[in-house]
Length: 556
Image (cartoon, rainbow, N blue to C red; front, side, top):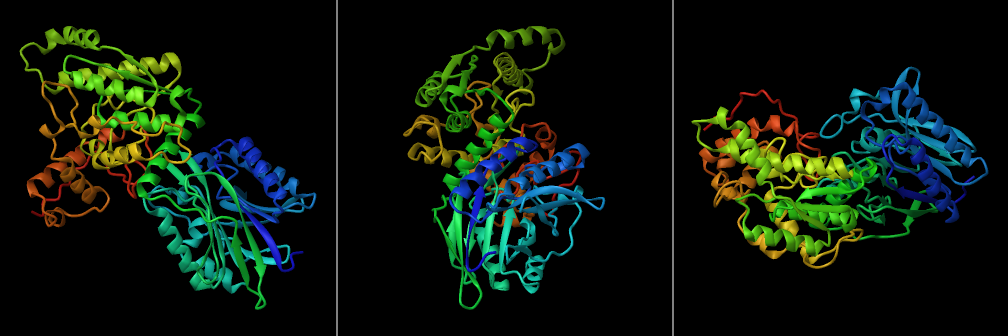
């Protein structure tokens, strides 16, 4: 029994969804490390055994059976008197399916707690698959009454108030809370509210790692009942930290953490999230490396830099695919970028396949004027060649469209949209420029690329262009990016009316045009590769609009 002091190990680790055996092996390693540091209780994140979010996998009986067996197998590790465990696992009971936390001690599953408040917004869709659990009471951990609100249960006050009223002495919160810009501070403020309301100390354990579009960023922490931060773990880095809990004379518990890490600012956090999302997508899906078209433009250059930071230069292959409109400047910039990143770089001219398409279609297209169709043939030839390289050598194609382009459809289906994953899909063009500048002056921890200028300065300063016709620039078709991105942010993230956007100084006709482009590009986005979620409203997981949609805001 605990008397007046015990130690919690907070595990911030990176499970792989569906890899139950691998996740159990990872849990065992962390458990062994924690035991060596005299931990009494090892706290894991939400649904650690299965990975999170499991989506419809939990509807498969064989999957649920394997998760339960894994939890029971892991429980056996506690039979010899070592630390107890709190670990997330999907669980079936009484013909209901729960998002659960299992308390493992004495060689068995000693207790279970089920998530009550199932989120059903943004990236979350838990009401689709899980049943809501009953309001929980505390778990008896060797004489200490521990409240275990699971993720969303601590984002509102009902469950934590119930736990406090039923005698909980502290709150341990397992989480699967994904990254978006500024999320770490929002989490902290909400957990401070729970501490103020319950007057209980709190330990917040968040998952780490990329899962399809979402990235779990860790940044686990602990708070004392007086709202003083006792522990801050790093963001977007794995680790185990320790919280020593000491009983005070008045019966309350005081927490003292083993580390207090500085959290990165927004640009550093965004960069590391993009890198982690790409790295985990490539590695967890078993790709040898990545290949991408390096055009000499900013988007492909930043994606190449992120790929090298994620995987190392030896796993990144860059290919320049020039045509008659490719400038000498672009050829020089692409080569300089590849050299700065120290990656393999090849040049594959596309004149033959493009002219072959023209020849094949000449009779059908006779009498028509060249235009977008012919431009898109260039992009589609490039996409086909990159996919051929991918098929031949087993590397995944990285697609490189930014959020501005994805918003207005400034991209070619089956051309530059070809690929398996897009690290900058949720970054507007102005953010791409800012992050490129930032990376040239910073090399974040955990990144594998070189220090110094990895994106040549000329790529950042020159006018952006798709180079699909003579003297083309992006601003031939689009407003300046600072204007475009502000309008898009208002439409996408803020859902603002045309009137409200116009009050920011934008022309109504331009707003209407951008709104229309945003809506009619939905069919393209449905076919786009997944990409890292960075903002509070990314395309796909957060923002879900119909393809067939005649509504337009014509309030002006």
